[in-house]
Amino acid sequence: MANILVVDDELGIRDLLCEILNDEGHTVELAENAAQARAARLREAPDLVLLDIWMPDTDGVTLLKEWSTSGALTMPVIMMSGHATIDTAVEATRIGALAFLEKPITLQKLLKAVEQGLTRGALRKLTQSMPSMGMSKGTVAVADMPVSAAEMAPEPALQVNQSFMLDKPLREGRDEYEKAYFEFHLIKENGSMTRVAEKTGLERTHLYRKLKQLGVDLTRKRG
Image (cartoon, rainbow, N blue to C red; front, side, top):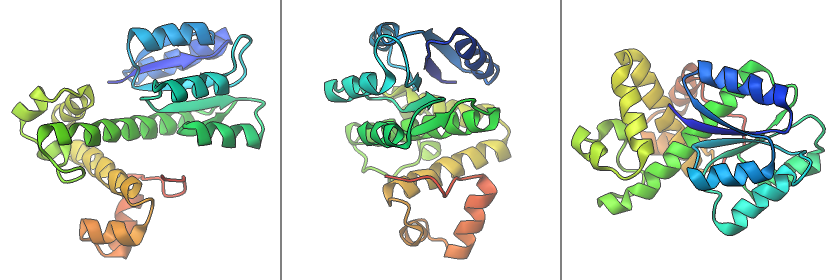
């Protein structure tokens, strides 16, 4: 599963998020301020960061901007706050945050945001690794890759995706692959259903039905 960094100055929230994410099988690292978050980021780049906006030393938006300008924003970041304004959320998104969660965070919203963030991060790593493997971006799906190639791939996300496809029942693994596949094309085509239908060879009505069945979120902004 994934390595997730949770950054929040409130002990209760850190413990709660850690417990939930651990139950989902993820490895969780905790930071109570920006200094600890920087150190955690330097030790090992997490697959996803849950970042609180209001912290006593350096606020989350400032830390996000710092990572962005220094080239360290290589992982999806989901912002969290109980008091942020719309302008703050918009600014965080403009800098590079993937999503914004308002506290108190419901279990369903948390898990959905984490799933989408990890999918986005895995797809980003996949497309970045393809040129070094002699492939064109978007032309080869992870499930279609030979096991030997997946084992040799430098990006750990490829290995994670390959393992979850092989370790689960066929139907569940196939559904997860198809969801990641369609989300990849939605991101690539900037949410255009017409272009996704053309790329995937599906009629639009069938495509809508398929996306709904897989639980793909069509309401969030894609870019």
